[in-house]
Amino acid sequence: MIKGTGTWPLASFIFRGRAQLAVDVEKLWISYDLTMDDTTGQWKKLGSIVLCQIHTDRMIHDGVYRDELLTEVDSLWLSPDGVVGLVDEQAILQAHHRLHPTRTIGTTEKHRTYLPHRLLSFGFTSHYDAMVEHFGAAPMGCAAEDIIVECDEIISLGQLGGGVQVRRGDRIIDLVDAEVAKPCIPFTRYLLGDQLTSEDNVAPHRAFLDDGMRGFIVGLAEHTEPVDIAVGDEFWIRA
Image (cartoon, rainbow, N blue to C red; front, top):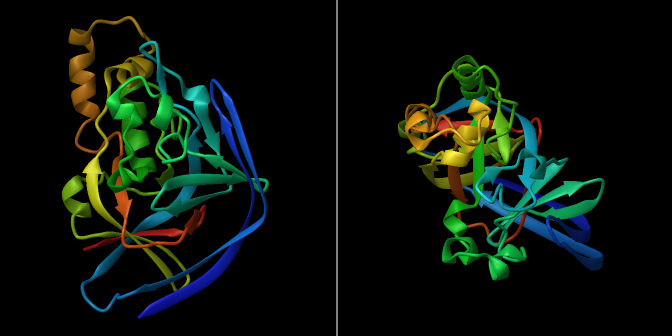
């Protein structure tokens, strides 16, 4: 059994999108206590986290993918309600957080629906190397993954089926139900550098980005209190 405890201060929530939302929370401290059973199975370290970020609004507006909505953060706090990024003691709601304004003003049912099993997204430096080779350029993290893991190999969904963990010392966070983050047409056009190119031209490049090249999405396993992820934490999968 592995157990860890900790606390963190939360000064305010800040939403930086087309509208501004600030909710001041004075001297709010949230504690977590998580216990993990790691007595079965073999685990493999893929690498360490080299980037944490969030997007503060939906990435696509009027059919155009907007990478300026990405914000690098010091750490990420995960809870059943979603992801919060911490920058200089300011907490910023990730666009998919249950309390984010787009959950109530989203233009479609998809945007309004909160999906806790699609909580956190992640990608790999090796995938970005492959995207650079294919497209000529692909800024690290441009696919809007919450974390980027340094890794030398291309990772498939099949390798993630046994479980995913983020580790720091003796603290373990279990992440479950891995899915492929499907590439959309606007993102593919963004990488091609042509937001007006036809869908027929986009199709083969979009296929290249599928099957996890563009990243993966997971849920948080049975944690009821917030847990934090930061650059330097280790990323493990069940071998």
